[in-house]
Image (cartoon, rainbow, N blue to C red; front, side, top):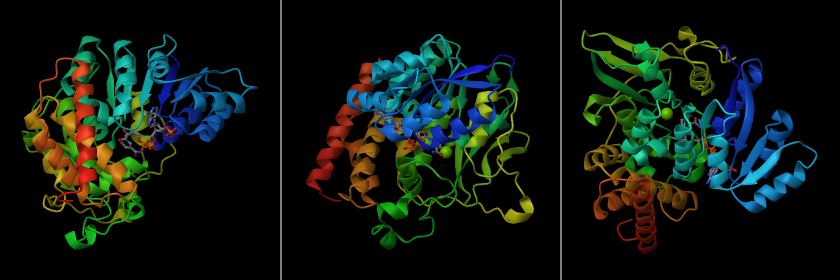
Length: 394
Ligand code: NDP
Ligand code: MG
């Protein structure tokens, strides 16, 4: 990296936000923070503003913006609010790289805005790629954007693929091996999984993450979303990708080649590693993450996922094959179902049931423009809410 990189951090108050800020503060000679965005967490945003002094800070709503502006009135920062302002910081001429780490579908528009402004995209927000799919990738190609996968598995695959100056090529690849920790309920019976509480589901064995992705990891919906994410990123189909349960989360994913070679990327599970790689690629920088000690790990286990106890994984492959808006339907249903589970309206296993019913009941349509994605998202959310309200078969 010859020139210092100016960063726009979307989702600054979240778990990925924390790790990104850590990397920026470790390398003040390489990165500066131009702008930050979050939804409602004013207190944390005020701390970030005081520590990092970005030029612009954007909150989800006008009240949060006003509160933040009052808390930080002594700081020379421009305070703004709403999606338009997020799109504006993501496409600002003063920005080189955009960390897309807003949670869920809400991240789509700001990420697209960054793509259209030709920024390096550090993609953590998998939901935006899963929902907009082909449209998203077409914009990436059209604007010749460097799209760096931040999701640890996809970052690992990126590292295991042959690279040239423009990214990766999938020459001679036979399949991708996408690892999954299996989550906290990997060995639980279906009977026990019925009684899971939100606190138990948020307690991931290896990774410290936001609430929604922790629930998704426990239900394997996260792996389903990642399966679709990998299909789009690496131009594959679900049948080219094998999900491998690997409880230690040391092997972050692998690429299997025609000649029988399998290349794996390994390390201590810490998101600072893929984040730093995305920010510094094609170079590498230090992260202060401890080096992997294989003697301490001693043993690496691998097994096949149980699709009966974790049907979300199959639903994701089904949604891919249905095509069009089906992936947006599945993602929207899941966002609503996870929220309902967190609010104790439905049980843990009902998340997959809601997802399945939405996928079956809402016909997929071809995506011709962004409005189609938003329409599909909206209809799926409404249907999921109705299914939860009626409660039949849940
Ligand atoms: P968190 O829940 O910890 O943080 C989410 C962030 O998004 C917060 O800053 C939140 O703001 C912000 N946000 C939520 N809704 C909106 C909105 N409508 N407008 C603007 N900002 C919003 O999530 P994570 O950091 O764990 O995950 C972020 C993304 O990265 C997700 O898409 C996730 O799937 C992906 N990811 C995360 C990994 C991890 O290890 N955490 C690994 C791989 C991918 P506020 O705090 O104000 O609500
Ligand atoms: Mg992941």
